[in-house]
Amino acid sequence: MYFTSNIKFLRKRRGRTQDEVAAALNLKRSTLSGYENGVAQPGIEILVSFSGYFSMSVDTLLKVDMTKLSESQLGELERGYDAYIRGSNLRVLVTTVDKENRENIELVAEKAKAGYTTGYADPEYIGELPVFRLPFLSDRRKYRTFQLKGDSMLPIPDGSWVTGEFLQDWNEIKSGNAYIVFTINDGIVFKIIENRLMTDGRLVLYSLNPVYEPYEVSINEVKEIWKFVNYISEELPEPVLPEKQLIRSIASMKDDLEKIKARLGRDISDACEVI
Image 1 (spheres, rainbow, N blue to C red):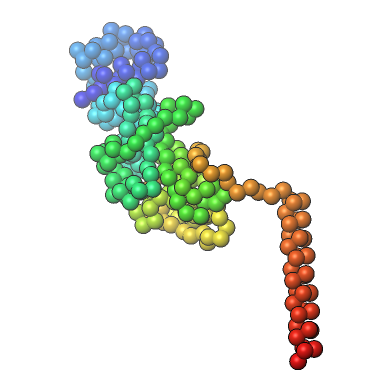
Image 2 (image 1 turned 90 degrees about the vertical axis):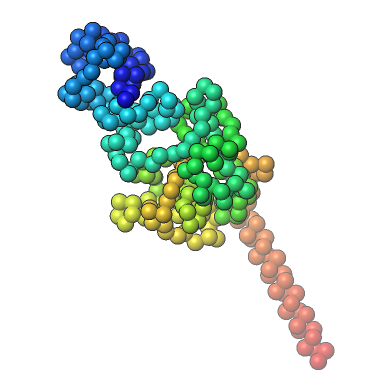
């Protein structure tokens, strides 16, 4: 049981003194000190009080060693994503941390994507992925970078490295935003999402390239969703022509087409005269 170490850890993490916590829980400071040092055992009513104070379930306070959790995992607990409260709604992510217990950003290259389908929940597989850090991203969030292939992402170039933030609560998906979606059937795809979870438990996935038709996936098929953060590429995306330039380009193409048609008309006329 980790109750004694957890309440001490959480108190210090929140910058509270023993006097402040004891006062909030209607305890004597010496009683709280006894709980933190393991020389006194709380009853069920006291456990419930600590649960309410720290906004975590009793089971979590007793069974989870919070000193071993990464910063992003602690952040998830503090934002209400408690496995013992939310049950199957909590999506547990296998992750890696550096020597200072900071979240790594794992790289999933194109050649590693097939293995990710079966190894995404395997600590050994995830532990073998190359890692890096981006100093401008928050230490309190979990990120992963995927190399994505194909032209469905255009104008994002083929082979780009797309970084996403792990999305714990899928009810936070915003229609019209870009996400990396991982399903067992389709693997890892980068799409714009239309959120229909509340109506029929499905997501509609749109490619950035309008040539590709949108399609639906049941939420039961989805394993992970990562909110788009940025991408890295060796290539520049195709330029978007300004409106006036685009109009001129279309007019020029029409003019060229008319010239071709006129020339073809003259050639046909000449051929008829010869006959």
